[in-house]
Structure formats: C-alpha cells, structure tokens
Amino acid sequence: MPRSRSGTGSAPLLNRVGLAGAAARFSQRSYAADYMALGFLAMCWLLIQLFVSPFHRMFSLDNKSIQYPFAVHERVPVVWSVFYAGVVPFFIIMAWSAMLHPGAQKTQVTMLGLLVALMLTSFITDIVKNAVGRPRPDLISRCKPTRGTADNVLVAWTVCTETNQHILQEGWRSFPSGHSSFSFGGLGYLSLFFCGQMHVFRPRTDLGRCLLAFFPLLCALLIAISRLDDYRHDVWDVTIGSLLGMLVAWFSYRRYYPSMGSARCDVPYDKTDPSVLEGFGKLNDEEQGRPRSFIQGDGPVHEENYPMEESASRIL
Image 1: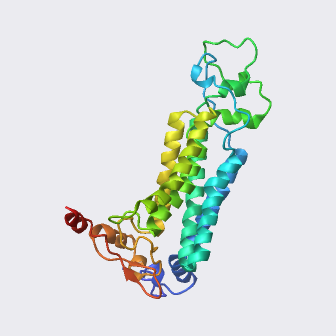
Image 2 (image 1 turned 180 degrees about the horizontal axis):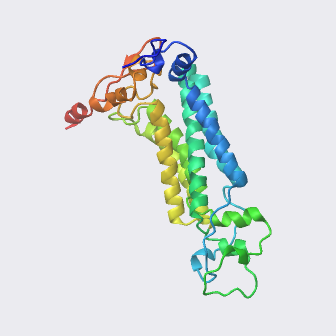
C-alpha cells in the first residue's frame, strides 16, 4: 500500500503529527465536541422557533375531542416550566458542587449532561410537534371559525379568525407535550443524578434516600398532569412526551456516568483513560464484566458491581 510522503497517511488520526492530530487529541480528551454540538442544537432549536410553522391537520367542528375551552391562565406557564425543570436542577447541582467540592471535572460533566438533556429534549419535541401537526383539545376555541362553517365536514385552518398567530399556530402543536418532555428531561436527569450519588439501587438502601431521589420525578409528573387540567393536551400527548423526556435524560446521564448497578455509579467516566480513547470497541467493558476506569481523586479506580446475588442469599 502506498504511503504519504510524511509517512503518517495510514496512521490513526489521534497519532498523527500536526494540527489535525492535535485537534483530534484535544477533542478526545476534552468536552469541546459536546459543547459545539450543544451550541448547534441550540441554534437549530432557535431557528425552528422563528421560522418553522406546524403542519395543519384538517378538522371538523363537531369533533368533541377538540372542543375544550382555551385556558387563558395556565397552571404551569412556559416560563415556570423552564424554571422548575431547568433552573432549579441547575442550581441544585451548583449547590451540591459548592457544598461537597466534588472537583471541576465532575461538576462539569454533570452540568453538561443536564444541558444536553434539556436542549436535546426540546429540539426533538419541537421537530415532532411541527411534523405531526396534531390539533390541541382546545383548537376550536383558539381557532374561532368563521360564522356559517359546516359542522360535519373536514375544514382547513384557513377558516379560523383568530388574529393572534402565536395562539393560533400553537393549536396544531399538541403531540407530544412539550411541558411533559421538558420536565422529565430536566427533573428526570436530576433524579438519575440523585440515584447515582446516593447509591439508591444498592442492596438495602434506606427509604429516605429513595424518596429524595424520586421526588423530582413526582414534580415532573405533576407538571405533566397540569397540561391535562388546562386542556392543552390529551393523555397520549402527555404520556409520550414524558417518556421522550425521560429517555433523553437517561441517554444524556449514561453518556457520562456508569449504570446504577455499579458500585462506582457516583463517579463519572474518565475521558482521559487510554482504554476509552482507543475506540468504541472498549465501551463494551461493562457488559462483558471487565473493569473500566473512572475519575476519582488523583488516579483511576475500577468499576465493581454490587454483589446482588450474594446479598440476596444472605437475606434468604
């Protein structure tokens, strides 16, 4: 096989000399790529908010599922939803960092995981909302159809007389629920973080830790239920939105932390560990039962699973 004049044409990118190799090594050993992707997601989400209109499904005025009244005052407005599911978890993690001093690396990956969970959840939710274009339960109240519109035929959104375009266009953004997905994305991530830091899933964990760890999920559930009470969504919208937010939260958390069954579930992965830098093949260590290094103190430690079977045998 011919090689380049520099003799590095067939060498892995991480081992190459020069700007490309240095950039690749910096990306592998830092979270620069994650921050860049996060910024890209934020920019795409903003463009969706500014320029994308939802698909307008046709509807009939005699459809009782979309005849609910429009709630002028919501139980949990958008601003408060962002505060409860975004700002509160952010400051809780910051307070945890200030009190326990876990180190800059651990604080960074924890905060980064939260931001990724919130941004990725919002991005996916808005894409699906606009693509599906499902009418909200209060669509007719929003629409204010022109007088004389037939009740028993499908009509287009052009029969609406509502002048406030934000209120009108939001009438076709029912599926999935954005409040539900965002609340479970942020508060669900916080719950996972609590579970990992307090080792909730180790054998014979006390009930107090469990209640504290799962309390954010209860708050997220109440936010999701409020969307049913305001007739902004139906059960399917809220259920799918909640599952979406929780799935993204789990995905974001597990990118930085090991599984809850690990004895080191409170310690994030060490990005500078050579076994991680060698490639994706090394990411199967956990499933294959081999040790993996994590960040803790001044040197790497190895993952150990809780002796679940041994503990169960002792109980029996």
